[in-house]
Length: 319
Image (cartoon, rainbow, N blue to C red):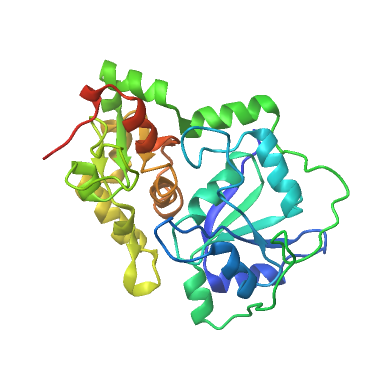
């Protein structure tokens, strides 16, 4: 199966990447994946209109999803094909994904492109740092469909993976409700490090979930790792250093050496959050910051699906 390059890139390294994108058929395409929580009084598409990295495309999280009762479920092939077409992307493009909050939705968007086999995907760490460096920005309005330029697409985007490879990639990197429920019922979840990226108060059940009527709490066997712990608020919400992230994971797992992670959790790691978005911040930390080379799967439906479907005995609270 062809391998996807999925990694972080600094603003300075991004500027260097732009100079090496030759011949002209090999493009570097920045993608704005900004998304704000409904209770945040900001408009991602409106801000895209007024400020963006040059030659930018906008990836709309609310548009490119599979139809579901649960929010932000990963797109299927048809939806993702539409996204590639709308964005005017080619398989030869190097995608550089960011969001204006620093690191929030961008890991999820980058992961989505990589999941569908796009060969080169970078996560910009991050836009706030890019602005501080006073690198170029565009501030003139763009076309109504939210793209910064008219793109002539000569042919349909051709996936690098066959349908069978796409299905295998999904199985390797995503876990669904029925499988996780069986793991919890059978005790097999103990073979995984199950990490929940929500706040401690929501995890323990002390605080309410933001969605009305949804119970807080956690999946039995889960360990709480709020995603904000991996980001440095004093450094533009960039990922913390490898050493800092390593210490956080060591403390959480009780391991002296993270190379022993698979000895304690032989099946690897499952990450989850509220809707499967910020969980990928944890996945990126393990895959791209620590480079642990362990399987990391995303529970796509995450707590919203679990709390809606799981029997009450599998909704655990610590209060």
